[in-house]
Length: 633
Image 1 (cartoon, rainbow, N blue to C red):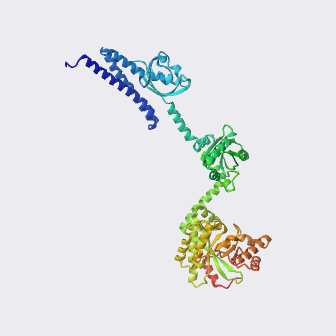
Image 2: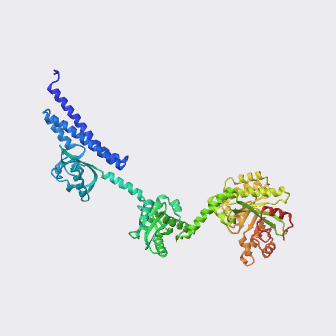
Image 3: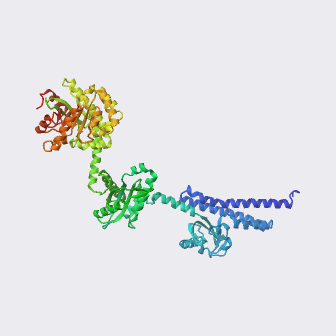
């Protein structure tokens, strides 16, 4: 033996090794607690369960092994007092909430952490059955798990225990068989408080299904509830009401978003105030709400419910001392047993809502099955329209414009037609609104201008009299910033002089006087002529005529048609002609179809006319013939 290896040194080494083992025990015991707290955030439920159970079992085994080392030291008689103290401390003060129960379910040992978890001291637990500490709803499951543990099967479950203060707490419980030799003496139970994590999970689930501001179900939750509520047979219908707050953007812009949010919360409260317990209101998005009624008897019943909702929102809302009246638009979709799912029912209500808003808002409308056919027809038309442009199915017709006194052709108007391969010639009233809606009107309008200018130059090159060609501008074309450049490029490409192009705009295009003045001045500087089409049907004002570079007015056909029967229309036409002449503007009347209309216009010194009386729209070849023929009339 080394002389320096004295009994005192050996004792000090022994104490040091025991302290190291004690610290290792604490660290190992803390690992399952940390894992149980943080692993759920990056592992799936299945992977987390297996990993937590494995780590806990490993920690228990490691602590048991360390305890065996301490016991060995005690049995060896070396440092008996210290080993016993450490074993006692390990059991009492381990960070693990560890409980040992015998086969009868009596608690024979527990750590202080286990007692603190449910508000008891360790000494209060020892010798007591674990069953009374279980929450009533978890007792049956706990006993079943305990029986399985005694059969040698480790158990992993989430159970509720009753805290000493009286409230329930949710615990993650892992139970392992406690063996002595081949006999199972009881169970070692490791518990971890997951109440906060469960509350967080519930909050996340709530946020996924409910609107945070109003507390109403959101779109996802609403659609699930609609699916569950749809009737499977005869009886009352389910109905979805899709509701939109009229002018809500104006409210937000005027008072601010915070004001708008408060309004939405009050609307949500009113909507739910008188709903039956099976009916559901939801906030879909923005200022849109939906209501599910599960017992609608008929369309009339649905209308009654819609009027009731609108009456409930008539009373002014009080927001920061400001009374505010609102109106709403409501679209209603009624279920057809066996034919509708939640998406189809909501689509019906949405289409009905769109119809209400198109009709002026502040009302309700029940979806009609006929709209499906109309929607299909619109989609088909839009598809055919795009194909027609690519395949060159559009053609131009030209309607002559005549001098009323001489009968000479003084111009032509280019009118686009669609030569459909199946339907034949499609009138512009069918496809122009669709082209304006989807934006194709810009490309179509550019093609019309190019083709009209090319054709006019071809007539002139053929030695025919030089006359201007009129082309209608759409509102989308007129609002383009590069319109003047486009017109200039077309004139350069076709070689047509600017004075032989007449661009027709409508009165509504001149309402933005700043843009209109700038654009029209640029065009007239090129040498292009400007006419006002359909005069008298829009924003009729001679003030802008005086300030804009306009050369001609075209009286709308609706006035010309009735000048023989309606003295009012006759007076309007006569006044337009007189005032236009006083402003040095030429006047052309369109839609002239009989001799009486023509004589009235001649009597009041109208300059030009256009209509079926002398010629309908004709192909370009017919215009060439007419330019060589004697004057009309």
